[in-house]
Image 1 (cartoon, rainbow, N blue to C red):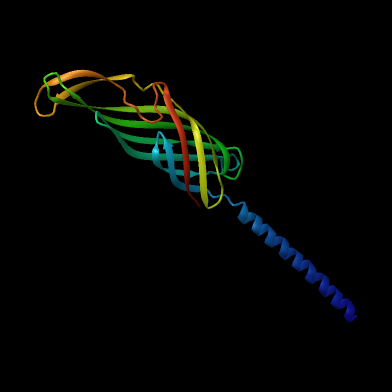
Image 2 (tube, rainbow, N blue to C red):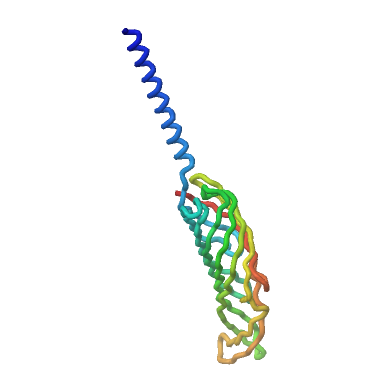
Length: 210
């Protein structure tokens, strides 16, 4: 009788240990596959140069839909031209997998704000200065890949389709030390990644996911 009771106790102990082991393995699997939904970091490339970036992976379509936003502000200057640029983009990343990482396609709307200042010698020998502003809006299509984990890295490349980029700009120059004015036509200045038909997009990003 004592042997039977001991054997029965051993069986129940083994069953309980096996259940605890299964529960622990399930908990580990759950932690490993937990979605890190919020990602914040920076992107370096063109046309953004360097920008702040944010992304949130929603539960939609089994964790495949992730809205994002990018923002940057920078200057490109030379002897004849000063260019103040602001770049913003928002859209959605669509992941092929269901973990908020890996390969994805992106559709976004970009806006490149330009404050242009041109300098040129006037016919009377003075120095002229003219300014204008231009917003270049684009529809962006991109492919990218993002790593998982707390620290993430991503690569993106694509193209922004736009019809807002002029080939040249007519500017009224005003003499810096006087009131004389002169009208001249300038070629649209060189901006990295920006052509007459659209905007080339390519960047490397990194940051933290929560």
